[in-house]
Length: 97
Image (tube, rainbow, N blue to C red):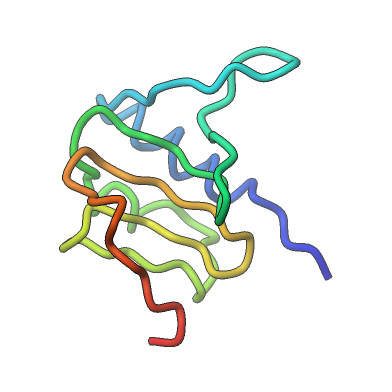
């Protein structure tokens, strides 16, 4: 069963309402916060992730990883990530943890 990415859009929306901004990906129909990458869809934020805001978004799956040490939010269901500027692309996230 395919899992929707909508919950990640909800997190991005909450972070933007709290004052953050994302680097938009140009898509066929308008602007989207998520860029396609080899391993996941990824949203690049301009400021560090406010994890208190992210944690307050209702309806998040238990597979959502809030990795404050790496400035990363990752969903193991839909393989979608939200990264802040402190995230290092060479960091390998171990999804088996």
